[in-house]
Length: 205
Length: 205
DNA sequence: TGTATTTTTTGAACACTGTTCATTTTTTTT
DNA sequence: AAAAAAAATGAACAGTGTTCAAAAAATACA
Image (cartoon, rainbow over the protein chains, first blue to last red):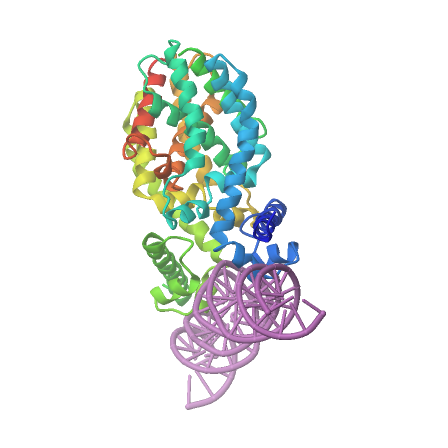
């Protein structure tokens, strides 16, 4: 085990430490309220050090957004054992909403905050792999549904996009505080109630 | 016409001038990139003056968000002449998407940016009237659809919320740059293609 | 071992942000 | 024309992300 190897490991470890500290503060006080100085203080390093390991704040937010997708992958893992694609589709949306509600700040970072996408634009890679993989799960499941005779007359990709938008829209309205003010009859369950209307609809297709 | 009246009119005029300048800069360079100093420069007043007419930046963003809802109302106005509620519902979603795509920065401010909601929280009024009115149009139309025998077995409010979320989710993914990276077969029409899948579905309900 | 070299860490400094408020300028009243 | 009220100002404050010469620590070599 060479010194260079150990240094590489230590570099990786410090990078993870920064991300860990950043995530802790994000969950505690929100993304916008967390500063680089906060993060540096949290892990007992100087601001300068943070900038040695990350190009800028967008880079931190992008890496954390990727970690969010790993966590979403954990939530999704139980789906792969479900053979029936319709049942899998129903559960996928439910788990998606569950993840969003239990990890609001992370969900926001993954699907709403501009920083991770700005990071991608300013790198030579303009593919959003994390998003593509997740959307791939929806598309594949709906494709299987169609192969089993469901959704006659529909197109896989647009229908998948519609389904994604439906659950994403609900999570978005919740997380960005657009639900409280509208005075729903039952604001606490409106997300699940709305999702149930969707379930009733696809039942018939 | 008393002096006090004229002063009140002038105060209102300057307030509108600030909002007009702010909106211009928002559309030119984005909300986050626009500073109070920018706005003051744009209308040839000092920063201090802006703070005489607006409590803080959130107040400007909230007033501009209200203006956005007025503009959405303009788009919606042609809906009121449509007697058939199903046809009105179809067109409402289409117009909603049209507004969002033609006024992305304003839509973002109205439905995504946190500032207008923070302004409401810090005032004694925790009702989001603009959102409630707009959602009311969806609810009323769907209620009429149900009265005409559509959407059997569905509940008005959750179904309306689901429909809102569906179109909002699509606009959101577009505006927050989550579509480009996923590499859709036809990224330019995916919003309308997705909306057409929804139209096909409600056709049968 | 002790010295030279490389790597890592530092924090002061820069240009910017939203916000405040004593002071100045302008307008109105008397 | 002087006094009072209203409106506009911009320097100053505490904060932001970011940079980079200098210091500190770790490694390599003698």
